[in-house]
Image 1 (cartoon, one colour):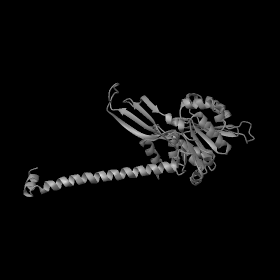
Image 2 (cartoon, helix red, strand yellow):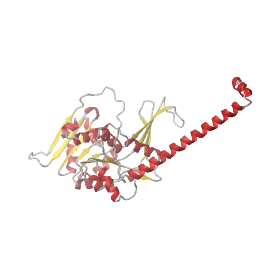
Image 3 (cartoon, rainbow, N blue to C red):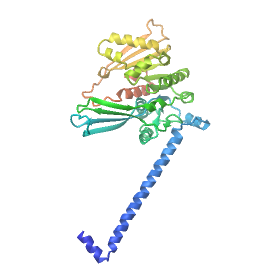
Image 4 (spheres, helix red, strand yellow):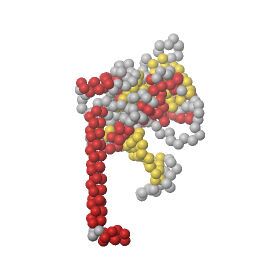
Length: 358
């Protein structure tokens, strides 16, 4: 301050006036940069909605773009933002707790699509997001060069006055779930792939987040077009709901079964799990179906039925053990979704069912 005062006195106050002008000019330049960035982001969002997330009925130009963006695999399911918070010490209720938190992109359908995209299969995703920042950010990350997930007109509608789906979990200090909140209303608006979208596809992958009628319509449409349908049942309650819908199951050629009864049987009785798989396969596509049961550290159980064989028993079973067990599991969230994406990618590049599982 002494030096600045001396300079100001020496220059008759000119240095002070100059410094004030510099501060004002810095503020002006900062404001101009902020406005330019905001305008650029708004333009990017408008272009993104115009090209990828039109909520209007597709026209001829849209159909041309659908044809250009055709994928061999279409995914229909949820986009969710996950937040997990863990307190640094014992959780105290009714007050604020110092904690570490982690946000990540989630949703079974989104996870599967990302896995397929990162492996190079370039899937087309059908879902729904709210007109908010988190939904736009998730879609932009999916469109990155690393993910290579595709969208076409109407495949991911932006729903006004709705939030992008979110899941907030609060753990205790030991890492176990204490409570969680899920805002999933928007998943009722997940769009359904049209015949044009499915015509060139080999696989339709469904998670169980859309309404049951939407799942039925999508599965039946794909089945009629000769597209293999794979279901990831997402959770125990949703798996039970689908098990009561033979009109959905009969269109399924592939399934990932994680229902409560099967999980109980996995570690107790291999013969019981075979019987449960047999009962479920009876309800699936009469022309042939496959069922894969993930068993955590115990690997994967594969069951199938075929109708074009001379064998008396059309059912086949195979247990696949984990070849390189890990000593420490840090986080198993999304592991099954990644397995689904990698499995379908392996089939798309020409592997047999057995090789794809391995």
